[in-house]
Image 1 (cartoon, rainbow, N blue to C red):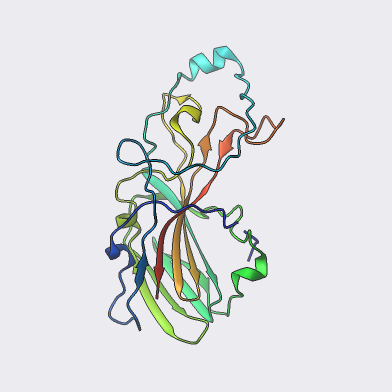
Image 2 (cartoon, rainbow, N blue to C red):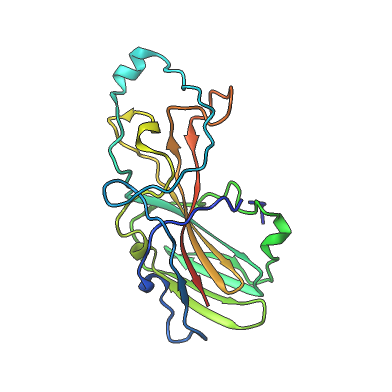
Length: 231
């Protein structure tokens, strides 16, 4: 399993139904509400991580820009498709089924600490092109202490507003062709012993470089913690 940071921020207070547990489960989930919801008129932004270098991205060929019809981005950012990936840590066995695809491993998975504090660094969805939304993700796993657990995580309920979770203020988002953001976000599900966490990671183009002197660092890909359920 590749190394991945827990540079996460909590967003959105969401319904307990998204952490539903079917009758076969050994325990009911305890929902941990995430603080400071975000996005547009319905949400307020938490303080974003400071990662920009302060340098403006070079504009490129004006003729190409005119042909592509670059406009300020439609706000708030929304998505109609997404990619998905699941990872298991500190379990004896673990399976996640979403959009008819299986994730996980029948073998024991090491604890997240094996990979260091940044164990979620670079994690993106591997199964892409998923139209919003398939039925709930079905999770069955054996925790570190040998307890068999089952849960259904309703991705559609968690993201029913269709809004992309991110930390880029509107004034820092780069203009896009026809003002549309066509990059689908990644929805990521982590099973960690008795805890399930749901994240979103989206690629948001920016007006400012994210790394000093690197003209290719024109996107933010913040990992945003959206939902936590403990069992």
